[in-house]
Amino acid sequence: MTERDKKLLVVFAFVVALGVLGIWLPKARVAWEMAQMDLERSRTQLERERAVVALRPVIEEQYGQLRATMPSFPEGVALDTTHWLPLVDNLATANNVSIVRRAVGAETTHGTVTELPIRCTDWQGRLDSLVDFLYQVETQQGAMMDVRAITVSPDAKNPGMLKGTFTINCAYTRQAATTDKD
Image 1: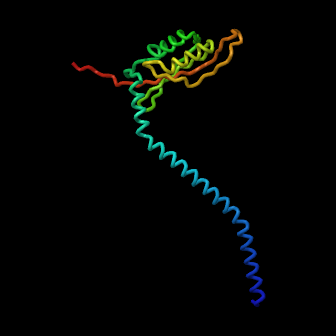
Image 2: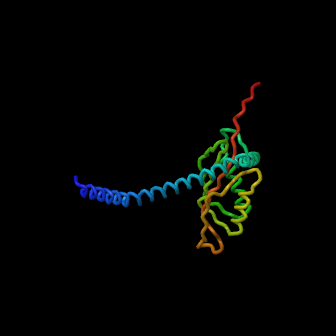
Image 3: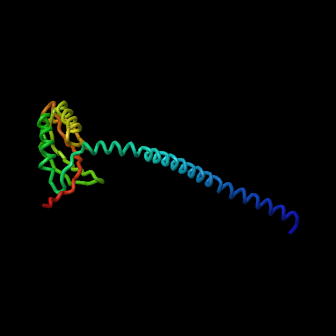
């Protein structure tokens, strides 16, 4: 190989290297930026999780206070017709909300808390009556209820009246059945 061929080979290798770098470098830069964004997202999530862990004592104290106010019933006792439905019906009647159809869902347990959904699929009432009813559901003494879903629309047949659906979730705890040994 002559000196000229060696120089051409070096120039050719340099051009090929620049071409490879020209193709590879933008992709590597995008990958680097994506990795930096992932790292920053992970750091933010870690900070949020650490903040939640730091709040654990406060959350546990709040849970303890709420749990103390939550009603408790013995295991195996059906509560849909004996406790929750009459309570909801009485609140509705007291606030002039007419519940035409309702259905009780299945109990679900989340840790020590049991929930029972009551789906009211057809109700009617005035706006002020509905607001009073919903307020009393949320603040009822001796019960822990929450309206999770609600639809409201004007009743075309009765001006000034509203109709719709809502779901009330009733929360309570269950006590283990006690056996008396004599």
